[in-house]
Length: 318
Image 1 (cartoon, rainbow, N blue to C red):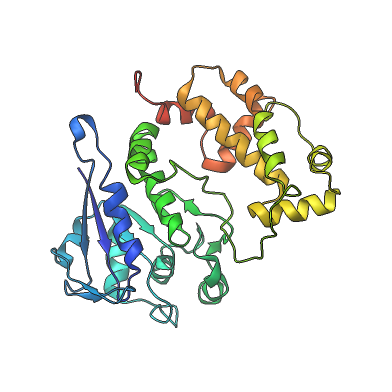
Image 2: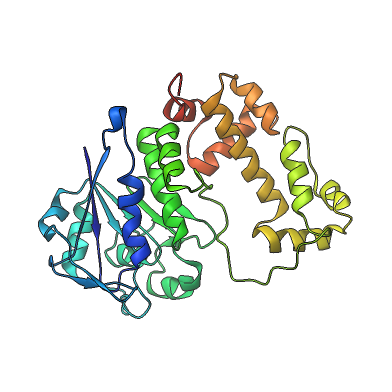
């Protein structure tokens, strides 16, 4: 069984502390056999105060840190992060010794302070990107995504993005059907694209008949056809400039990026749930050619269509 250890730092975000147990711990195989053994500890085995104003006392001591296959670092409150870019050497040692490391929200600061992110892509909550960049300019920070999977090091943005990252890990380790079961039991969306924009604090206009929701619904029904920005704006009865501004305000993305994300989403579903040849998948998603599909899928998740199908195709009869 895969061993997951959650390292609770002082003022750990209470919500994020429970995510690995709920989502990774909720993944089951044949006969409801647990696929992950999720445990919590602190650096000294003693209690830590959480963001919710109560303390937690783990049942396991810090010795389990050395036994972790995956080590998870949840976020913690502002003002308790590193201020000089360093971290306790003991934390750095255990992080470097783990086979795989995950962080949620400001937990990325801890990974960066331990040197795990030097020269690598990562993300964190958009509110703290300026501070992060000042402390760790050597990290290739992308503040506009929900999570980043860089193989043995995975980082995510704030709170709910930790759900997306945990489900992504289940999906990567055990396939789409297992992850979908976890999501259904937790009553959350099975997945959101890792490259989807974070929801930033920006004024959203009142959405009435002049919004872009109806146009987006139309586009989802016509992903197999060429869709241009001019056509979308015309259907919304707006100028291209107004439509683009309204679209970004409502979705956090440009129309072009949103369309690409939806097409990748459609391609992934078809690869998981049908036997359609890759050429037909490309056509149904509006990519046109297998080359275009391969490029966009690889850009989004780092895999080719055939490799993705082999890894994430639901078992027959699922």
